[in-house]
Amino acid sequence: MNPQITILLEKQHMVFRVILTFITTGYLLLFISCGKDQGTDEDIVTGQGSRLKHITQGTEGHGLIGSLMQDYSLSGESFTDVGSYPIPVYTYYYTLNWDWNQNSDQVNAHRVLSCSSGLGTDSKKEILEQSPGFIEIQDERLGKAPYENVFAIRYQDQTKADWRYEIHVLKVTNNMRNQGITLTGSYGPVQRDDIAALAPNPPDEEAVVTELLKLLEPIQ
Image (tube, rainbow, N blue to C red; front, side, top):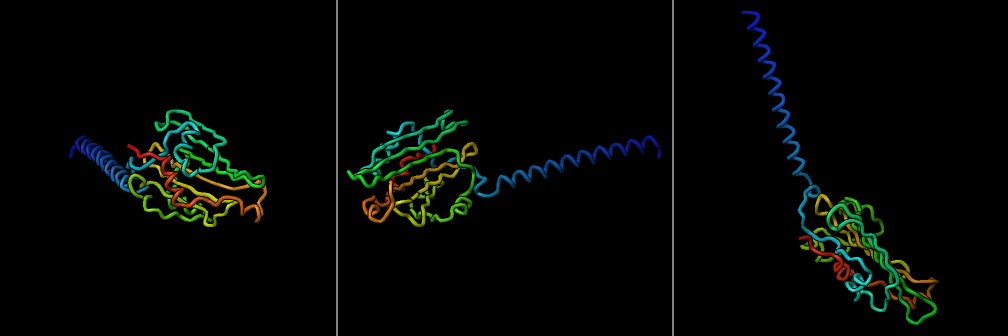
């Protein structure tokens, strides 16, 4: 065979192999990409569920959960609201404080509400694993629309001196992070049995969930 023809055929064969390699690689990458998109539920973006309402004043928060704060007075507030929540990029969190005093010079009770829109991307399983001493609150409203991305936990051992409830709102879109609501309580200035008898009990978990859900809104 003519040497020039042989060289030409070899070049054509080489070009064909290069093209075939590119095509094969492209299909492989596409397959991997599709497989990743079809991964765990945590990778799937639904855009459904709930998120924190955008309140900017303590009186708004008190107005929403006022029935939980009977006999308590709003005593302090702190808001950080940078950007245009819920449109990224934003920084949004706040803390509200309440005091209780039933005309007693021996005991004062305190409650603190903290809400944050930037709490990472951990799954429910991971959050529960990272919360020793807590138990999940079994409430039929949670895990269903419009709270399909919401669950709640509390201290397993609640006392008048130290109790805590947490509402966890898992991210529902790629541009969101987990959100959280924490309600804690205590009393003082001295903690002993005779004073503890004067202090208020921790609120009932059903009432807490009912009221704290008022701080959320469905994502449209």
